[in-house]
Length: 259
Image (tube, helix red, strand yellow):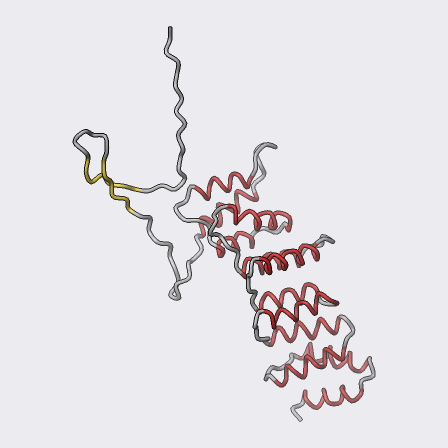
């Protein structure tokens, strides 16, 4: 009678370490080892971690390569690859991978996939900004609802956006309640408008045919020491003239010539 084979279940750890045996018990049943930790990630002079370009290229390749079969899942392959590394994916690296994904559906799937890699992973404002930019270039009718859902996702996870977030959203939505919601984010996140934000807001109100609010934005812009470029200046002047706002048009012309 043959002795049955006994199969031992063994867990394989993705993280690899290098160790040196320092001592062994006389019985040989135990030993002591010194583990060499992996080298720290490179960082810039300010202490921010630098993205690993080889990781970004490999991850992008996995996601964009055609699957070898209908049963293969690129996200499963990506998970296996990332778990074989000594360090987890950083938000900055996730943002750089998103930059290479032009498909909104693929970008959204990757965005929601990232937190599953590590309980400590947390998206930051620049990963949201990257995804907002991808959605803004999409022609999918669902892109506005997707952007609203993404903004709600930011609020639920208490992620504070930057003035770049506001600029992107103002250019993306451009009118109606969504535009007012974007303006409210400046106060919510305690941000300060810059010259580009004023320009985005002014153009958004002009596209909405609201020359009065656009003129108020312009006056606030001037009070804060910013100047409007000739393109925006001509757009506002034309809108005021078409709406027969003669007084505002005259005052606007004087302010343009520093009178």
